[in-house]
Amino acid sequence: MMRVASADDLPKGTALAVEVAGTPVALVHAEDDQFYAIYDECSHAAVALSEGEVDGCTLECWLHGSRFDLRTGEPTGLPATEPVPVFPVEIRDGEIYVDVNGAK
Image (cartoon, rainbow, N blue to C red; front, side, top):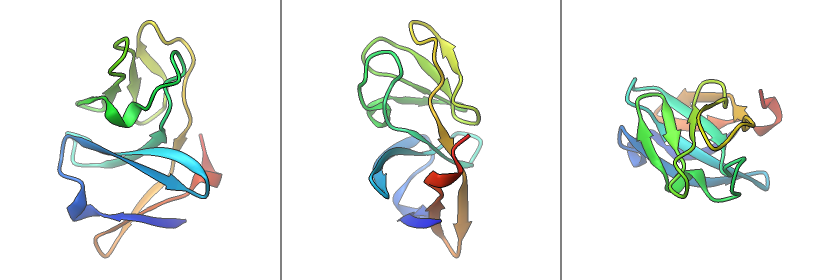
């Protein structure tokens, strides 16, 4: 697990691009008040998901509108059909940690 940000730096409903051990990660504070880490590249168009819109527990790609479930990485809206990896997240003393080796 690597520390990537402070929980205070990520308001609810926002995403932040971080790099963890060379892996691009979109760190998301979802509307369920949980933190998620998802691979920061849309499986359809290879653009940064961290620049997209957070909606509930999904992240919408800004380019073509593909949506990804933050819990599973599964696409919930076309045109994407391939999932993206999601990573375990832990909050310790207000700090956010991500494990890119534990991809699901």
